[in-house]
Length: 282
Image 1 (cartoon, rainbow, N blue to C red):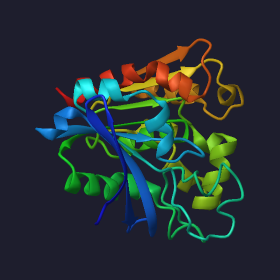
Image 2: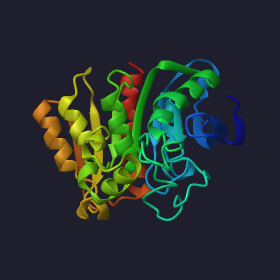
Image 3: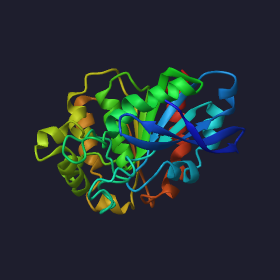
Image 4: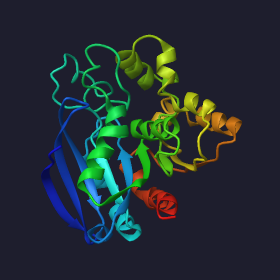
């Protein structure tokens, strides 16, 4: 799979790059950001995958989150993919900000007309890591995952559905129980159809109830003044209750005064980088 370099900027001794490739899973051109720390010039490094939220591209995290210094310090490669297929010419793909373009929800769609292209779950789980492993100085056995909002949902379900695949998982303001919130109901009914049993396969609160895998150390930060928390879109309490019931350790930090924005992410991203480095560099 050929990679086309779109941009490259030196940053904290390493390089923040953006590449484009033809995705076999999504049947379109896709971009991803990748930060290569100085350490990657001399040895194989672990990878942290970052999944962004609704309306985002590969650009939001790499330009706004201020993660580069910590990633350079701990020798982590950080990969930030786009949030959906692009330019698939599907009727309705650009009609709303919370469905279609920029809103892939990290599921494999089963419904027409979405099922051919909207396969973000398999893209993140399989195709993207294969591409990264083949083209960069990574240790394929050492990877972790994190994300924000819709991407926090993505990070949680990928870690919970694939025990042992990721060394650690964290999230900022994740959509924890999508089958119970307006965003999730809209996306899942469109991508997955009307049967709620099919929705449960992509709902972290539901999946965690039957999690049997290796121990996972989950870190979640949530802004207390997040407008989407008060609007009932995120529902972290449901996820925490399910984790507690299954005795799965989760560090949940409610951050006073913070909202849903990248200002919130930038404030606490170093804690998350450290959290992952602890397991990736063990």
